[in-house]
Image (tube, rainbow, N blue to C red; front, side, top):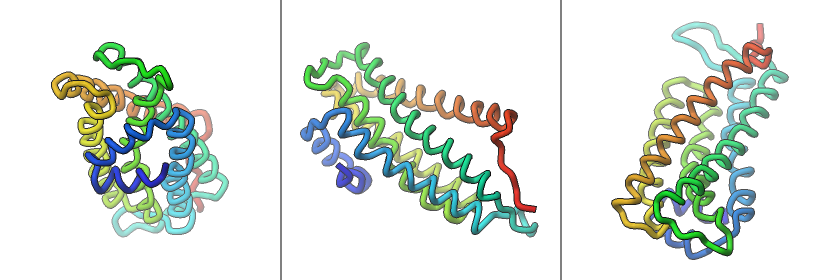
Length: 203
């Protein structure tokens, strides 16, 4: 399954066809892919904030305590798993309104596959968290998000087997849901910080 990770970045059009033809089950698509790739940003961030640190301007290096970083990274890991799963379920649900025929073998395949592989660029660039520089990580994340948007527009007509006109509206709806989920995660992070799960810095 992980061979699609590189292919979806290098030649997405061919890889979407290959993913569709593989017809793996929901369990295979999700569990053989997301739990492993989600470790990339989490482990990178853990190392970056505890061993490398960051600074603002010419200020001193800021680092988190190991315990604090462990809690935040664990929460982030499960948030990634949950977020990709929920996005896939939203896509499956929305497909009913866009003329997508049910797949009797596994109705969760198309939506899950789209969510999983569209999220792949964002998970891969998580390796840059090893060096937690604000502008570096912001730049690569924006580029990864743009490519993920492209993958959604490219993948929906192939995976869902619908016209490009209908696929465009479908993809726009998917992106809107994804943006709402990102905002919700940010709000949830603030709530968790107020409940005591915020970062603890090394003095």
